[in-house]
Amino acid sequence: EEVAKEFGIPVQFQRFWLWAKRQNHTYRPNRPLTHAEETQTVGQLREVSNKVHNAELKLFLEVEKGMDLCPIAPPDKTKDDILLFFKLYDPEKEELRYVGRLFVKCTGKPSEILTRLNEMAGYDHEEDIVLYEVGLYCFL
Image (cartoon, rainbow, N blue to C red; front, side):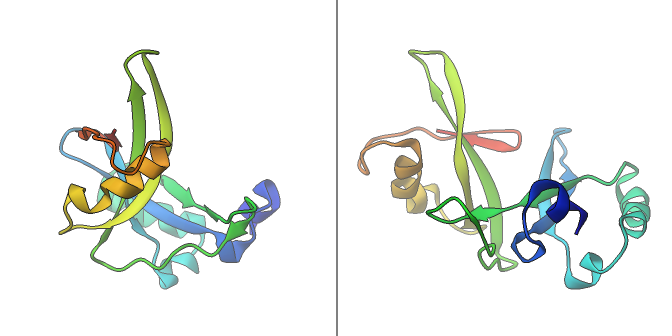
């Protein structure tokens, strides 16, 4: 409710994720809060997080926007889905920009999302692209 007041995003359009520390010392959103966790206070969540991660409570707020850029309900997520973030590197401009995020199946193959990635980057759907994983992001 505090986030709704501060940012104008109604509660039903918010999905909070817990972060996980990876072996390479980066962090990534690991999993959405469960329904039971959503009913806890921030203090209770922080205590659980401190016991598991020995760190402060860090949450990622997922907000999905519709065509009119107004918040909509987040897409359904199964236990087999992972959340990936994508950035595009333009070597001519030596520029890196965020292009979006996708839920993908953890058993999926990159070739299955190439058309969607080209669309996110503003490329023709058959454009050849190269993917790299770097920390929390995948680069196009």
